[in-house]
Each structure stands twice: as C-alpha cells, then as structure tokens.
Amino acid sequence: MVLGLIAAGYAMWDMVSYNRKNYFFDNTIAQERAFQEQDMRIEQFALYREDVRDLVELTVGKMDLYLIAAALLVDRTIVMICKQNEAFPSWSPEWAVTLNAMSLASGVFYLLLALWLAMYASISAQCFGARLLTQFVRLPYARIEEMVKATKIASDFDSQGARELLRVPVLGVGGNVA
Image (cartoon, rainbow, N blue to C red; front, top):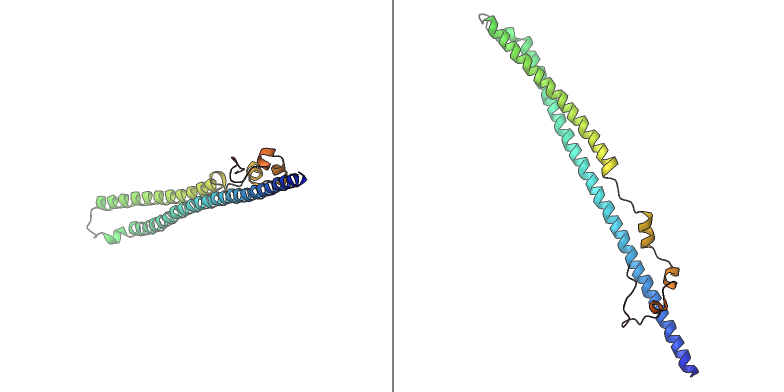
C-alpha cells in the first residue's frame, strides 16, 4: 500500500515536472514567435520608409534636372533677346523684330515659371517626405501589453488548475499554447 502511494506520488511529480517543462518550452517558442513578428513588422516599416525616401529622392532628382535645363534655356533666350538685332538682317521690318522679342520674352516668362515650379516641387517633395517619415510611417515598437503577453513566469504555471498540472501528456486535452 505504501509502495503504491509512493509510486502514485512519483508519477504525479513526474507528470507535473513534464508538464512544467512543456509549458516553458511552449512559452519559449511563443515568445520567439512574438519577437519574430515584432522584428518583421519593424523590417516591413523600414522598407516602407526606404520607399518613401526613394520616391522623394526621385522627385527631387527630376526637379533638379528640370531646374538645370530651364536655367540654361533662360540664359540662351536672354542672349537671343540681347542679340536679336544682329540675328535679323538690317532690312527686316521693325514689327518682325518686335514680334520676335515678344515671343522670346514670353518664353523667358514660361521658363522662369518652370524654374519656380520645379523649385517648389522639390521643396514640397522634401517636406512631404519628412512629414510622411515623422508622422505616418513610424517604426512600430511593441506596446507593454504585447511584451507582457509574450513573456511568462513560473507563477503562471503554478496558478493553473490541477487539471493542467496533472495532464497526461498524450491523452490530455488542452495545453498552454499562447
């Protein structure tokens, strides 16, 4: 009889220690999974941030090219206005020279407008990129609730009922998969 009680006590102790090891193993796996999810979320948002930076850089680069081209065209157009008397023959009517000057002046106006809009677009892209990075595409750090849910302590195992503590490994239903 005493031997039977000792064997039953030993079997119960064995089941409790086995279930305890499984509990902590399962929680270690669940914790690694939660941390991997957090790492993947951070990596995903880092990619989003890289995409925003690439788009801003692309826009600013294009606007810089437009600025250079428009500035060179303004320079050449102003040179053409200044030297238009030399470009036309001396017998050209005055109205033809005036129309040429007016068309070149309107060209200068539109090229200066293009310069201004290219600068505005470049500055706007940089400002909007900074706003996106600081307000909308922030790195998702784990909240306290997520950290508490991912970590378990020994008292969590001890606070389970006797049914979970003495669960038979293969036959028992349930488990503590988090």
